[in-house]
Image (cartoon, rainbow, N blue to C red; front, side, top):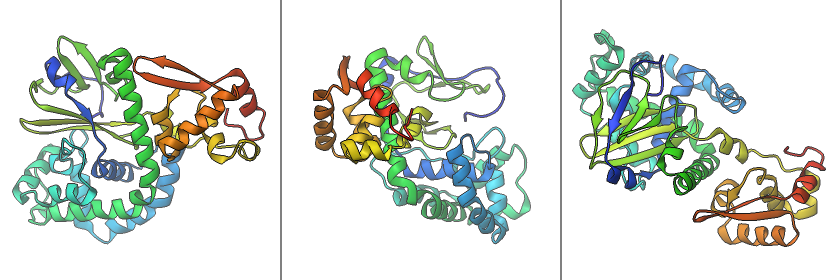
Length: 333
């Protein structure tokens, strides 16, 4: 968990093959769980989160007011130092599961295991009202509500942000190795050398995970945690890059859109920092062919330039493109 005050390190020991074979996956359930944590904590880290909380927390509070047992369950599951394990199942290694398949893992948790996990997250005895057999079902229903009411309406845009983050980190791996991609993935997370990955700043014992499948899972809320399905699969859920989240919200000036066309203007507006074609596809929601055609025209007009970085080709605005964007009323820069 990426929470709490600085303490002696919590780290995983892994060999080079495990790190080289790791992969990024997108999990709808992880996004819903991170959103539940944000609703429960009500501590926004940026204006977008504040607006989302304003829109959805009143309904969340009504849900819990009508179901005091689930309210107590959430309070117990989101402990100060530990999140109840059954709330955060490890995603599938192929990243192909939908939300319904993922939440079924929570629903299938044995009630005794859920109670044991809650005792750990509470760091104390379970209150009497949580000695029940329906805790996994209540948790699954709550996450289904969060998904349907507060995440799924935004999922196409959030998925584009997550895909852009994955592509950016894969480019970092290609350019600077895994150290470059890991060191800013979450508070307290960094590569320590000697086959050690620090995953948080807590004093948990080190874990040997060499030979296991290692997954990295981005979410858009500023929340994160680690999970595992011992001994085969481990995951780090991390908050995606704020830079990329901001890039998805770049306003396109009306005059620029009228001059270049809305899609081409959107591409140019997002090139304040270098981006690959694939990142632009993820951020704009346009097809690869469409983005490629617009980049070709912008290149021919001298408004963007390109350079190779390892295996990746990055595009950015030229001085002329910068002047054109900044000259528009309501420009993004």
